[in-house]
Length: 205
Image (cartoon, rainbow, N blue to C red; front, side, top):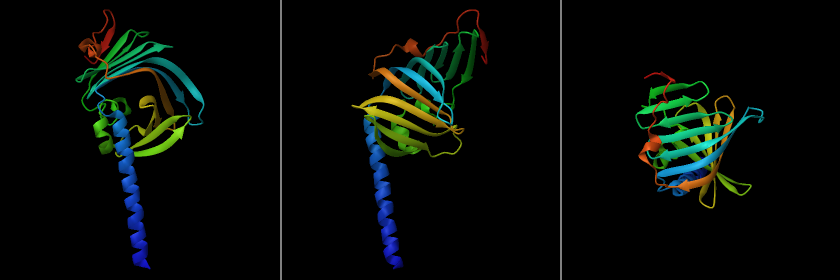
């Protein structure tokens, strides 16, 4: 009887592991050959009781493996630029720029999921959630415990990334819905070069 249980357990584990590998392979297929990415987005932030707290709009541009440009233009103006060496943030209303060494700040964060799709299986446990309102969802749970979020989900339709949803350790959910998606656009080198505007305070330089 015990041998039968062990065999069944082994069989179930084999199915689970194989299923996880298929999910990872399927997601990697969606993101394969993604060297650059550009899209507009609408960002919604929800509290733990699923109540919308804030809605904003902007532009995101990513270049593998470690560069990105993130601009909020509604309802406020903020710019974040990671140039591979430094991470810049510019608050236009405060006329203030904060700069930090990029280092490992962005490693294993949702910000660089699109920049390093080949490393997904090393950093995340991947589960295919299913189709909701025509979008195919994958949930990624970080394998390391010292992250600032519990999970991140990606939604696709017709091989196009439609949304990214991040749930932090406080139960708050941030959802980005993408529009005008361009996969592998040709990007100018200047896109990831940030020069502080004249007259603003620069902190950390």
